[in-house]
Length: 200
Image 1 (cartoon, rainbow, N blue to C red):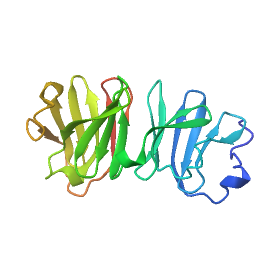
Image 2: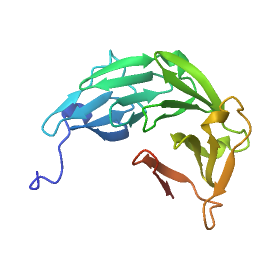
Image 3: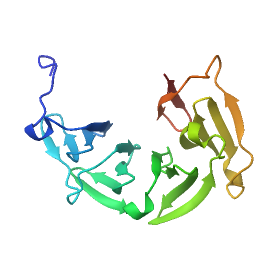
Image 4: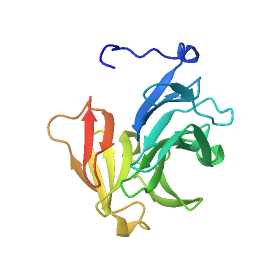
C-alpha cells in the first residue's frame, strides 16, 4: 500500500543471501542461496515447497511458466507454492543460464558453450557457441526464426535451420560506440521478437 513504502520480510528472511526476484502472474518469487524460494501474493509471504532444497541461484519465466534453477540443484517448475523438479542436478552441472523464449522453448546454456533444449522430458543437444566468444556470452535466445547470442561486444545471430552446423554461420553485429570495457548487466525479452539489452 502507498502508506507502507517498505515491505517487512518474514523472520526467516532476515539474513538471507538474495540471488534473484521475478514477478509471475499475481505473485512475486524471491530466490535465495540459503533460505530457499519464497513467494509473495500481495499480502503474505510463504516458502515454496521444494522438498528440502535450499539453494536457488536464478529464476526464469515466460507468460505461462516460471522456473527456479541452479547448477547444483537442477531446474524446478514453480506452481504457486510448490517447486517440482523437472531436470535433475546431474543434467545441470556447469549450467550458466536458463532461458525461456517467447514460444516457451527452454534453452540451457552451459559454461563450455553447449546449448541444449528441454522438451517432453528430454534434454537435446542443440548447438555450440563458438569457443572464441563463449567467455563473453551472456545468454542465447530464439527469436524470429533465428538464434540470438548476446555478447558483451554485440549480438551474434544464426538461422534456426542450421542447428546441425554447430560451429558456423554465426553473424556478429557489434554494439555502437566503444564497448571494449562493456559488460552485459541484463537481458529481457519483452515480446516475441524484441530484446532489451542493458550494458554497464
